[in-house]
Image (cartoon, one colour):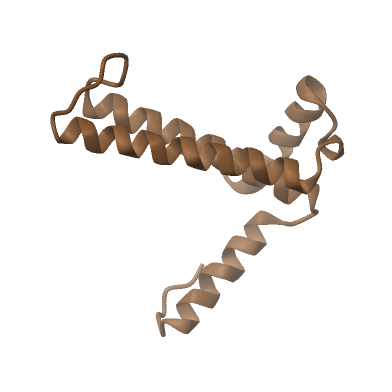
Length: 115
């Protein structure tokens, strides 16, 4: 099933407020630190993929490429979820922000590719 950022925002804020805490009870700094922590975990998962590819298995770590990539996917998803909550906390429409930034870089690179 395809999902868009508006669908994520609606479910994300609802779940946060119903099962964790009010969105505004965390400062933008709190949300940014949570997002950065998940991005760091994604980087660590990528490091484990590199170790696996080099044949340097570590006990208790993923043992297949598929397991490594699955771990990366989960951490990237967590990063995006926290990025959306940070954006919600700051009243940023993430769909608009991503579109604008993508097109800005396309303009800078003289690329005709736009979203």
